[in-house]
Length: 143
Image 1: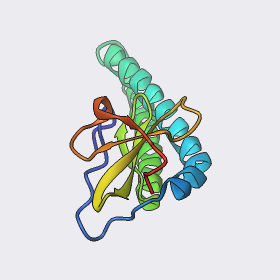
Image 2: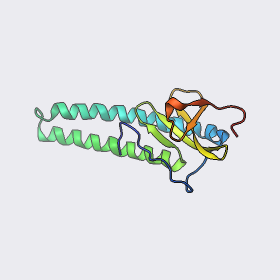
Image 3: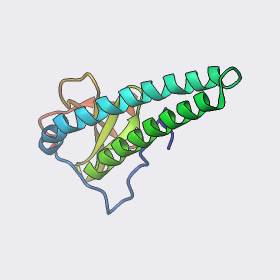
């Protein structure tokens, strides 16, 4: 798992959960909490990694072991959070800024409803291969 970038693989055709805009918006309070915890865990992990790098040559074995244990606990928690999102059918695209996609169907094709931590609601979508820069507003014809 790459905790500093995209961590959820694209879903395979056929077996993925698809969201309507309504279902995605109803799931958003839970998703928001999980994503907020993911972003906080990534920041914490970066700090622990920095401490570990700084301490490598100057600290005792016990101190390094304590840092390694702390790093492992944060990584385990991060893995649990990412798994929780995955079980919901939500794709984590960027763990640093809290960017996620909800697979959906629009005009007989799979697209992604796009949301980022800090946004009030799900208001945009994009093609599967377009990414964040290809976001378009969700119009009344979306469903």
